Image (tube, rainbow, N blue to C red; front, side):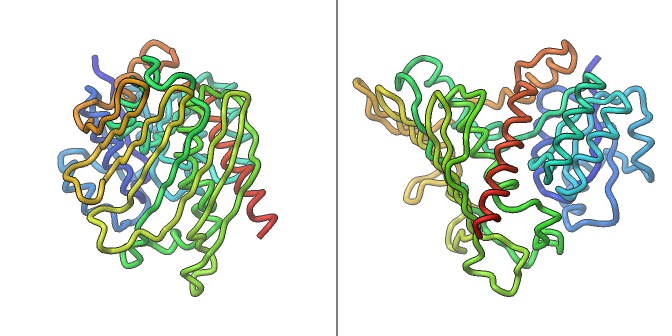
Length: 334
């Protein structure tokens, strides 16, 4: 019998991809609830017209036939819903950030320890990008030797006219490093094989939006571990002429070569998922749109088998811990 999931909170468009990819991996979408009528609702209903909306989220938590709760509400609310879901015997897949404060992370850790449930986070810039799947295969094959550094950039388009009030509220979204940079922290840990790391530099700023003091539109992080080094830049400056929301890139440096991913666009070329590989024998550009997204099938298997093939629980905790540390460091120095 296939896994059944429900969504609580659809305030961010990320829920579209989370739900669609779970369905593509064989799961059944059983129902959803959200508070009010967020501006994502019309697009959500258009994509999932046959999935019922319930009047009370508790009905989803009380349904013994639902295995997984997907969370994409306002970021400050996600940890509380995750805890309620786990206490009700459900596993959780949260949009990032999974938590926005240290107290929330501590509470989620305690709940996982108490209940034995899975608290996973959809780091979509890895899990929903086929080019990253291909890069992971190349690294595992030894194509660039030992990975010693990642350079991740995550530019985003502000799209001011479509953003709700909470988007400009620091306490609601958690800060630019807690939010966006969690993607790049995840990729650094994954590709370097790090299970611990130190933040060595962290910056946040608002350079272009002085009328929105709660918005941080620029951030950077440097970090290191016994396995390697990383640098991260995130921003809300994507110009309108770019054909998508951001020119996200990842460069993976190895001792025998490097990989560069131009995930969503490569200006002057068609398509997405551009992979550049350079080593002692190969200097090539390919595309990897057909490389697949194994995370979602692995998560379903983990829920069924109580394994950790999609992402370890410790990894999810560490990404959040480092993002919160970087955010606190940056704001202390601002």
